Image (cartoon, rainbow, N blue to C red; front, side, top):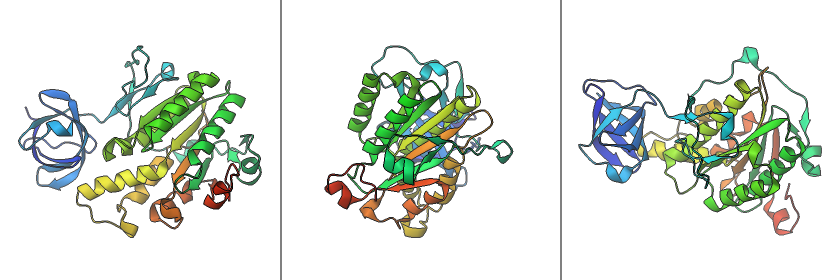
Length: 339
């Protein structure tokens, strides 16, 4: 009974839990004592024997006095080559229409340290996208990171999908792809899945979605789940990985929402003070090693078309290529609308 805690308060998607005889570790996964489908995650200390927890699922079933059990391990995801072609959520559950169960024999924590510098590899090879404006002015380097910046409705997702299609088709025998949908529309994910299936390249792509309808904690963790699978393909299967994420700004925004609910004092531009370290931890996991390369293409929403927004600026230091999409060019009907 030592690992039993009691919910003290619930505010939105953050619960405060008290442990009297047990001190949980940060990132430990909690479950409701009589309903394991209700999941929480330890985030930070809120006082003596009290901890702020992110409610990942089942907030409507929580209330003051409810007992929760500490599992003793963080959120984990199933990893296997057979997952390619499947669509899952951050809990490792399949959300596509296939009746085949996901393998659970091996699971990795979504919280992992970045690649050590002693094994980091720098490549000079260019992934050809077939899009002349990109290949000429802002090429996608093997093992590098490309950012697609733009405001609402200027073609970021469209361009990212086209790059995914072109590069995967041209190199389908050489690499696998991971697509992380973070805080975007369910409709866009459905359309992407149908297009990949129609083109016959779905068996070499793995997709994880945390749509804008999910709570902030799930959206935040979806990006880390995508990075975990990319690391598995790189380190265990020794494959070159193309990592696509739509959208990195939603990752920063979700972290800000969670920090607000935990009464964290905001930093520059109203964002959470941990934004810089969160962005660093995420990007430093997406690097190349002697076993394989991870090449990232990231869509970044620019709020109010303001490139000086602190959330947007926090992403720039990790990019090798920057593509900015122009609203004026998009409205003129020229695609891609590259400034």
